[in-house]
Length: 137
Image 1 (cartoon, rainbow, N blue to C red):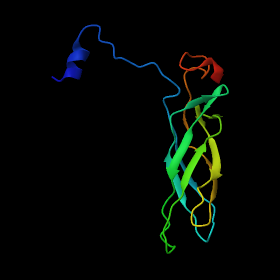
Image 2 (image 1 turned 90 degrees about the vertical axis):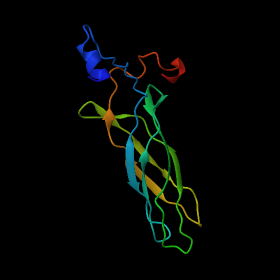
Image 3 (image 1 turned 180 degrees about the horizontal axis):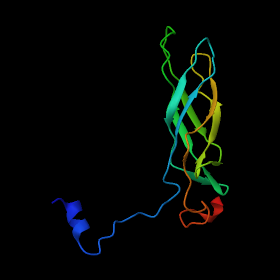
Image 4 (image 1 turned 90 degrees about the horizontal axis):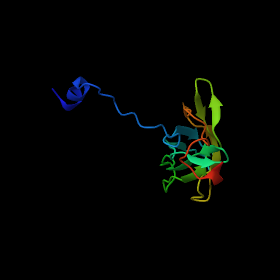
């Protein structure tokens, strides 16, 4: 019998369920940058954990675009943006809109926008818990 089975068989065993912290989530995202200098890049990644902002939360996006090998000097761009606030969607989940411009490399940059994949909403209002500074709400 392994340790988990042994614990389950003990009288009064209760699994430990951590308190949910709505900041403890992130979102995946994907966007196709617009065409610039006769090519475009794919932007894919995972956001940072949530950061409280104005009674809601936002996420940071910091990734490198896909590589473009077509130029003599193949290249990519950096993306560093902050999402918009949480947008509720059906099913008790939310998403975030994001947009911006890539870094300026080899004489050009690209614009992009999209929404993140959805994630479950918190079990309580973001600003009714004790895991943040009061200035955030």
